[in-house]
Length: 159
Image (tube, rainbow, N blue to C red):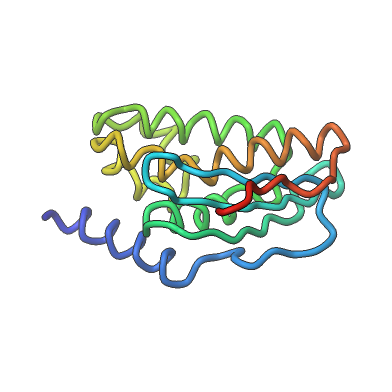
């Protein structure tokens, strides 16, 4: 394992052990609940908007270190950005996850901050869904917030 891989692995484990934004806050503008059917990872995410920007992201979830770390990194990256900027970052992260280990150009990678540490995950298709779970929840919650839908997410029974 290279020193860069080891550093990335430690960063992922640090976010998984000490996730940022974990714990659902009241006073949100959009909420989403997502499940990865292949492994059972799940996330409930709330987004708050203010002054044309994402002012808060909180979430709760269960799953592997990849899904939990990715949600933590996404929270740090997306807060303070406009919905358009968040959508663009989501597109860049999705491109990274679909790169199958080839990575993305350096300018795009720089936009992802700590989340670029998840690049190695793109070599494992079953894990890509884990890394994208939080981003899908954010995309759905942001769409609901933009549409003025602050109703609670529907969580299926038994989950």
